[in-house]
Length: 222
Image (cartoon, rainbow, N blue to C red; front, side):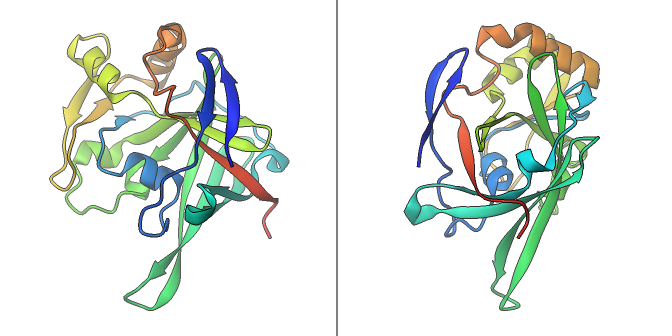
């Protein structure tokens, strides 16, 4: 199922995630850790925590076409501080059992946008991960529209240029088990959020034409 979402840069047909290993990975793991360049931050993005309601977020969510559908759960852990607990079930072939994988996402708001933040080390299990990456937050723009979650990934090429030009403080790092470069931003929360809010009209900060969308199939936690 696809959904057309209106954004100030136009209308985009939001597709689900592509399957990997029969889609045993869930949204952020696949979206950010599939080997491509990412933009992370030593400080969470978004000036203040977003107050959230259980009826808007809790439930079972899915993505992908019928033949590559995957599901994950969202539970509101702290509604006043915008913290979601996300989880999915993965097959443990060694133990011949099922394992629950879970991590927290904090939703924070800017002037006109909402951002999700996940501590990198919660979901990247590489033993040789760069120390800066381990301490940084994976972040993204997120929208909850009519029962669908839409995620926009920051544009790594744009942020790499901003760091190289000295417009943002940061560093380019790499990990031996991944290809591509990762950009770690050093700016404090207020400054990076203000920069995004004031430059968002450029249309270059996020991958607007490649959003990922997820729809809720069950409201509440079964």
